[in-house]
Amino acid sequence: MNQSLNLMAPEVRANPYPFYEELRRGPVCQVEPGGMWAISRYDDVVAVLKDPRRFSSEGLGRSFRPPWLERNPTADSLVMKDPPEHTRLRTLVGKAFGGPALSRLEPRIRAIAEELAEAAVRRQDVDFVADFALPLPTRVLNLFFGLEPSMASRLKRWADDLVSIPASQPSPERIAEVRQSLAEMEHCFEALIEARRAEPSDDLVSELLRSEALTHEELLSFLFGMVPAGMETTVYLLANTMVVLADHPHELERVRAEPALIPRLVEEVLRYEPPGQSSLRLATEDVELSGVTIPRGALVVVLMGAAMRDERRFPQADRFLLEREGQSHLSFGHGPHFCLGAMLARLEARLGLEALFSRIRGFSLSRSELSWSRSIIARGPLSLSLHLEPTHQQSADATRQPGPHP
Ligand code: HEM
Image (cartoon, rainbow, N blue to C red):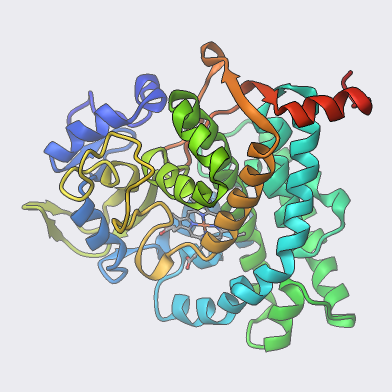
């Protein structure tokens, strides 16, 4: 293994794209950490993602149930299953993510987006992550679950604690914190299931109970799995959009003048600066890919972020082009595990950006403080200092009504 190929090197986390270019020349090779096999070309990435028989998700749950944790329903969630079990579960839960469910949520998501945008623009100097990109998906996921509004503040801690589990050797204090979060989650979801069983509503859990086809444990694992799946990536989609627009101010002018372009903007951000950079798989047998044999049992890192900069598939791949069309990106994955929340994430991003762009003329970003997530799976800034410039209308409104930060 070439020791210099390290996905976790600080310069790679700050900008992975030159590193990905080097990998695509490989094209299949082992990288640090841990000697994972990296897949980086578009065709290879698609081949792996659509082949769950040879590239399995099933064993991945083990890292979420380390010896220091007796119980963690996340380890059995949908994304860690293979067909036919995966197919059965996915068919049962899929309906809850469909158009009718989202249409019901849309006005409420819009109201949350407008409220957050209004507050951020009134404030002008914001941490875009803490003040907008994080609260929007957190409150939407809370709504989607049908939890009390006060529970939204806990979802972020739960998600952070869940994704931290696979990292080895936590301190005794950290173990206690993670156990505490898991116990809280279980208590909260048990209470929610009980309440919806007694009095069904029009939300996710009621919908899943109505079908009567999931066992109690399957339902619990599904809800646990949704917490990390539904938040971090959506936070980073919103934040990455602002990072990209800071370098492409002309595109901001275009989408402000023509808000119907916002969905296109979102799709190109998903390709160019994807919040979900990779997925993991385990090789179930020796598999040859691009002339290289990946051994049975190997951990494979499937780099969608690298595949979406592959010139063989995306001409001028390193350029951000709003007019790109018909070159399906892989940000939501591909094949049997294609993201169930893709429609919801797109809806949140569109409504969030519509609410924001209708209130600002432009913004400036303080790049010196930009620090990126330290994960090979999810990529986005941990915080984002923005100065928002309100539209003239918004400035006039602000002088009439005092805000929380005068
Ligand atoms: C921009 C936001 C999002 C991105 C980039 C994203 C990305 C992904 C990707 C790449 C996968 C496939 C993982 C794999 O193949 O191993 C996935 C699966 C999944 N996502 Fe998302 N996701 C986003 C938002 C959401 C939201 C908002 C929800 C729900 C509230 C959600 C729920 C799920 C679920 C349940 C799965 C598992 C599907 C399965 O295994 O069949 N995601 N997501």
